[in-house]
Length: 390
Image 1 (cartoon, rainbow, N blue to C red):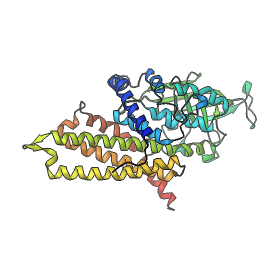
Image 2 (cartoon, one colour; image 1 turned 90 degrees about the vertical axis):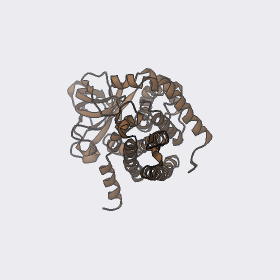
Image 3 (spheres, rainbow, N blue to C red; image 1 turned 135 degrees about the vertical axis):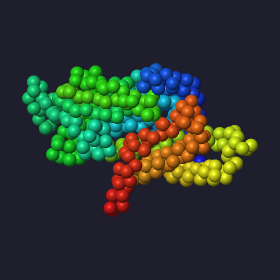
Image 4 (tube, rainbow, N blue to C red; image 1 turned 90 degrees about the horizontal axis):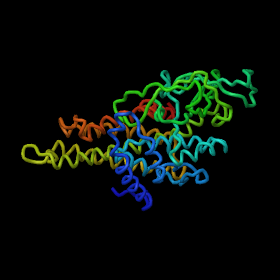
């Protein structure tokens, strides 16, 4: 089916991003996988190519396009090339928090460096005992005035942060971390507040990089906070409004995962189509066997159905009609479909599909996490079920 939501300028950006990533990122992927993170220079190169700062307004050095279709093209290019560079983390997840919640001083301090790739951020939500269930967050932030005297409720003074976070993408290279902390244990979801914590502050430490099955170029860490002091000027947004900020930003994050998931599934399908034409068995291409022909037909149809649904969600961001439920539905349904298709494609490769040097094996390993991060399938189904009144 013909895709109708894209204009020539969107397609041009996607192709330019593919060309850039194939030249400057893909050759380093094995090295980055070995060390567990990409090199910092790729962020500066990506920014120079116009692939960072999509959400950042022009006055802070960003692109500020206001057209989410450009975001989608960058995600598609990064996934299609398997570049290993988590452009989505900076563009879709971290920067929007500062753009939408930050004070003018915070924007001027952090956004220009993010737009050039010189400053990298991460967001710390998950904890050892709180993943999809944000209500289980135990990291605390207690307000404290100068000299240890409690500051007034009106603001000022410092905050003292204690706790730990885990599964934090970008945690190794981050210059700052947006931390979700509990500031009022008795207030439930109204007791969470966001803080910008510079990673050179006393009391902040990184654990070892987590040894993941796939997506090994993305540095994923445990982070620890022991009496980390930050000024009230590092509070991001209003006190007690952190949960609402998360709910505002999570739909776009989840849609970004869905875009990457569908692109990954489409890429796996393309590889499998080529293999089914070239691989011979019993004197003919394996795609000629009815069982494989039917499997390819079914996958092709499912991908086209998913693409129609996802493109409407992308337009929903552009015209500001995308609901949290639609984004959650896109995320869980498409990542489940991705796993189904990638696994079926791997099966068609036979024993070669289990060999790491084959790209289908690498895609299979990288795809598994997508049903987990950004909200597990089970949590997102429950979110939508509650919206239906159950």
